[in-house]
Length: 517
Image (cartoon, rainbow, N blue to C red; front, side):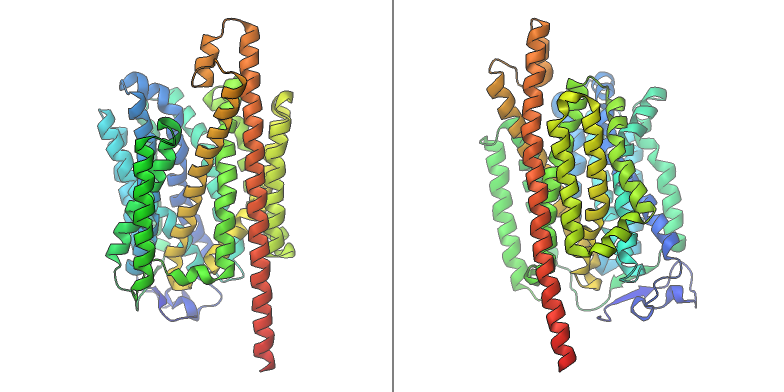
């Protein structure tokens, strides 16, 4: 282990092991479990905001006279800025201090929430959401990086399991929290509710989270930061815009072309400078390439499939947004139950990393197949599929995240978290776009006279029989999309498991050779 990553004193000097260098404290930080709770609280504020706005769309459309384009930018401004800045945010956390960037991220997120809650126009709300995205990028990278600093390698899988469970909890709780607030208050309350949580998290971070940073060797890679931000923002925008404007439209072509050129220049730049933001040597590590390759395919399948599932619950089964959120909750609750109790971590430890990933992704794929093939039986098949997906997520996702993070030098933990978050966002966005296109193509083939969307087609239907045919066509398209997603998830798990098993064999062989020498 290098000596470039050191723990700095927390808010007040402390002669206890809390302030000792991290590398000199193999047992981990003395308050590590308390600190994990603090950073999970900070993480939860960001995750809730990824989904909470969806339930407020009718209110915003009515009260702010927002157009469809305005609504799309209210949602996308947050994800665009957050995705584009993840790598740069991780690099800043490594260089300038993870605790410091965690505090900055919380402050920016809180300020953005205040402006959003008091916004008087669509433009103000869009700008506030973009500001929240900056804070979100800092929070998503620093929380996972801090976990890697304060826990020993033996405890990291369990800690990441809890961190992953909070991710799932945030995904499930967003629509529920949003629905509750809108039932009792005006739309701005969904943002203002962040303020007390942010204030509590700021106080706790300042009091308990130790500082850590890469103190030696790295120089600011400003060119790399600019190139990665522009390239990733253009790429995510192309993916988001594809379903709306058409994949062959000028908007998508220009955005995708810009992303390809800028990211190509970024890769060339990073390979030529002595202190790159993203070290190209990471990709020569079988463990790293196996983990990130599997991560993209897994998030591709899961992100797209779950996005389509919420449409099925609302448009076909007839549930409202809050009811649909409640009916997707079993997936997150399964993850929380298995990871908070430590059951998922115990299973993963017994099976080992490669087998855990294969089993976890196999369960997730089986869950998607269950939903796809049992849609005609109402919610029962969906419930079974959600529980299987939750069990697979609890076993496989923390192991996958740990494989990515453990493949990156400890002093580069922020960049590792940025890579993990960037690829997850990329896979998720690509999955929504591609699987959505598969659904639309299948739907249009079965109902050639249908309008551009299921609600429009149902509104144009002249009889109950026509409406039944239209919903049946949508269900058929959903089945095809979910099956494509299940194949992607299973393929991602098998690829990752195979490459990680090879990496384990190489490591074991090197260890034997070293012992013989």
